Length: 282
Image (tube, rainbow, N blue to C red):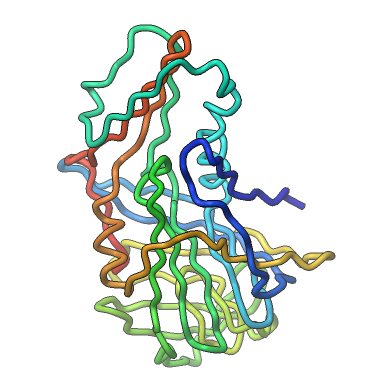
């Protein structure tokens, strides 16, 4: 069983204190390979990330376990160095990455686009999706988007196929300007799937859009011997609807650096790279 990774936050960065409220208990965990196209300059590249879906009777959590670990390690740089050893702190925002190139000391970098920073919590009973994100790892601003998606208007077809050794049935969906083809298995009778998808009589093991931009496919499935609490962190969020949320997140910084030189700390955030253009799902 793979270890679970939590988000480590430190008061040193003026993040709000965190308490958590149990929302459900996960008994099934599914891993999806998420293949998605990106534009870098004039070239299109395909990026792959592995996302985790924890599923309970009412709720689910979808997240990038590796990215959460990477962010936690980055946030621990200064506390691990020792607050009592720090002489000064300088914060530089919206800087060109090439303009911050320290010649001495230790430098640590965290790229926002290196992985999926978003967490998605589904409340299937209420047909509501909760989106959590920050506009940069070091930012104290945390965003919560509420997406009242309601129900998905799937069309179930008679076509069958096998994915991850499970017999699956085909379903089609038109959702916010894109056409999707999904394959779900009635042998795992849980109304769930990757990203925002749910609403079929079985777990969705594969889904892709008709333009070949996005592809989610199950690469691992685990039945948890001990149920795992699905928890929504309680921060002071900027709450907004899903359109406002998507607009804010699309403008987030592309990364941060921390340089520590003889007790003097410089924290710099970078502007988004204009040559890097992620293709958004919505």
